[in-house]
Image 1 (cartoon, rainbow, N blue to C red):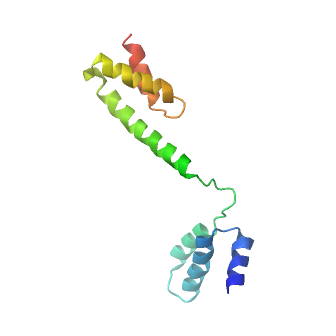
Image 2 (image 1 turned 60 degrees about the horizontal axis):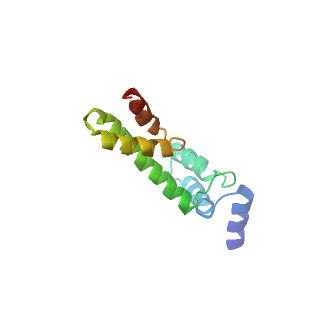
Image 3 (image 1 turned 180 degrees about the vertical axis):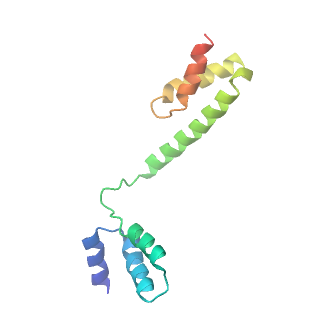
Length: 117
């Protein structure tokens, strides 16, 4: 059975978990435990090839999370821009210039900073 599992994984270019779930879904459907709609949805999902998908490294995942946090921060700063002290505005503006290529919300802060000049 293990050789069959590995062959399925190679033939369909699936990761280990999808290679295990696809025959499970097939079996449940053919035994009458899954309706056609759920079967087709899951079979499509678990037939999705592993090759060509970007696998993120831990560093990339951490960078993405950091950028998401900065995006939320910049959105909050933009909402409160009028009530911020000049020193706070300058600090946020400096950070926005540093990350403007990776965090699109940084442009909000840059635009607000340029309007105030």
